[in-house]
Image (cartoon, rainbow, N blue to C red; front, side, top):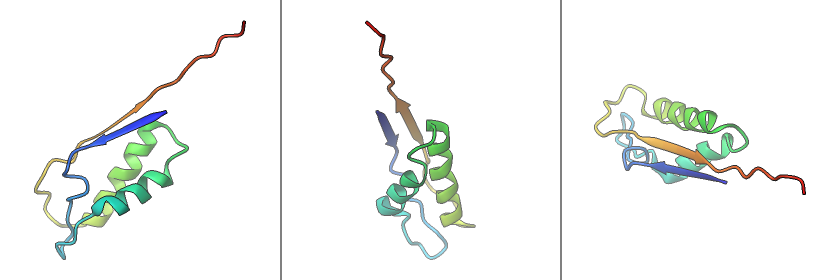
Length: 76
């Protein structure tokens, strides 16, 4: 199981046309890396936000955290 936590700066990132990145784009970026590690997932979203924003100035923090919970099953 994974938990992805983010600040409002992620979906509220804007491009030069003042268009918001939005949660739909964020979910799409998350889905491109859903089988990778947490690091790969975070990098995928980060790169997608950077690509979307282009040369627009960042006006808010962009903070993301991914936590993965693994259960080790021991044989009886």
